[in-house]
Length: 199
Ligand SMILES: [Zn+2]
Image (cartoon, rainbow, N blue to C red; front, top):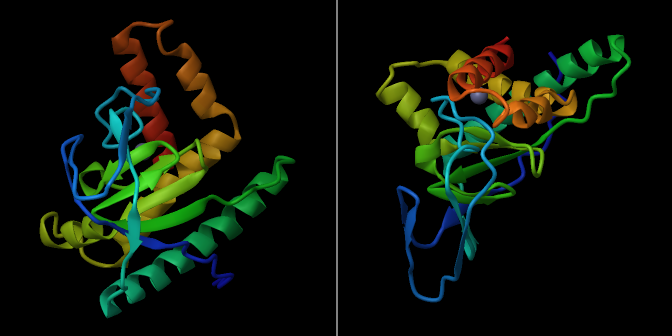
């Protein structure tokens, strides 16, 4: 085991409401809406493809005991992926640079715009950061009955997989072919991209 312990960056809570791409603006909360360039058009659950809203005025969130445990677990898994990818890429002459990781509740202001917890976990290539919403992990256990640490570790490893795809230029390649091929063909590439991240 490698406990290099990459620091979990921060836990944020948005002081306001956010639902389905349209934000309800609370007092004193400024908000900018903009489109982000779509990356994936397959039904992947990643948020990069969506219309996102850049929402400001995040306020620090007090971590609960359960969240603390979860964030510690997340940082250990992340450290593990760091170790593995550093070794694997070294063999191919690449130097691995680990992604950042942000845990959030409700919504987060990412380098790819705002994402609500409805978006699910995602990787933003713009700021090379994996975003994980804590409520998703609760949902994993309650709704999908995917209990245990493996499901969480799997999700993290998948998003880190997208980071590796980014480092190797695969995400850029996929983005380039979008518009040059049919929607059907592009969906096919998107599915492959997801499977490769799984792998
Ligand atoms: Zn994915």
